[in-house]
Image (cartoon, rainbow, N blue to C red; front, side, top):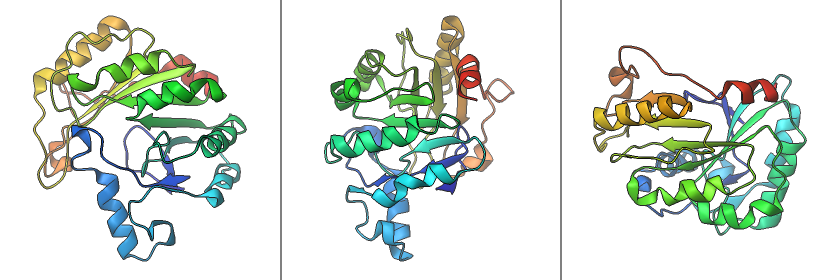
Length: 241
């Protein structure tokens, strides 16, 4: 567990680590870069760098948190990676089921496996399930997500690498948008952002603008239309308290 600087969560919890690239949004994966740093620092959990690994000892961590938390699950991995066995995924879900006082945000690019396994899992109200949608080539992930039994469904359009016109937001509760950051970030067009923001408004979907990104993301900031957008699924938040 670690406090997080990610704007839409409070902390991270990584019962699995490591991943492999599957789409263009993975090109400059921050988790891969961070994993190399942690390995160099001698952190045992990252001794195998970015190889996919499960960590049984991390499963007990959420039981130790005293107050309600908003938690990004597997910021350093993808819970639905093909190398993570179903029985371990079930263990992660059991932990989330048994800690209803916390909100657990799970994000995947492997929406096909998510759909394949979703009936095997218990979807308590405090599990928010999301898929990454960086451009129009991967919007099918939204359809897979929509078919699952997750109570709360969200999209992470970060890094946003192209327009996402005419999104089908039926059944979607929350959309996060953000630009790429790092040494060689790919540019995000303001029109893409404004279009998604308007689509969310028209569909009554909570909209969260995370950042413009760029080489200096702090300098670029996160103002859109002269304000910040920190919307969350309000009713669902209340249910999770």
